[in-house]
Image (cartoon, rainbow, N blue to C red):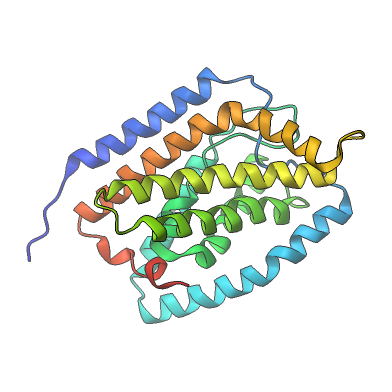
Length: 252
């Protein structure tokens, strides 16, 4: 069957990315962040989050190795998913809270390859951002990986699977992108509240404060994240790259 080419979805993707950049500029200067910066977590908590995510890295590496072995062409899809996450999550807003507000872009990779693969891809993205862009850090890589590379993609993937049979094909994709983003900010808020509980109200009060601060920018960014995820996946499907979407559908 002859594959058709669609130039318009590509233009739509760039347009959506431009809208995301505009939204970042509009809220620039607000006190929000989502990558936890280098040295911000106490050493005990930094070590705890590393220990929590390492088993999932091992599972993810094993799955990637099996995936590439059975389907070598998946390398292109893996690289694309990682690049998509890198670009979107690099749209950082300066903050005074000790972390960074940004879209995450992890929903797409979770749909295509599943959450275990994204635990590795997302962590690689976080590592490169820490080394090249000073976003996040090495000591806080474990914590950032748990929120953005592990829990966020897992919730996005579960949302996609739960809604996949709906008559509106765009809806589960949008929900996956948006929930992966929102879950990341909620987990980051929880991590910060554990490390710095409120002197009076404890962890719960601290969580409300951190989550409330993040919500100002993260809700519109999550909506933008979902829209870009829909446009990107539609472009992939229409250009004949549907074969990428197989691992994520089989996981679990």
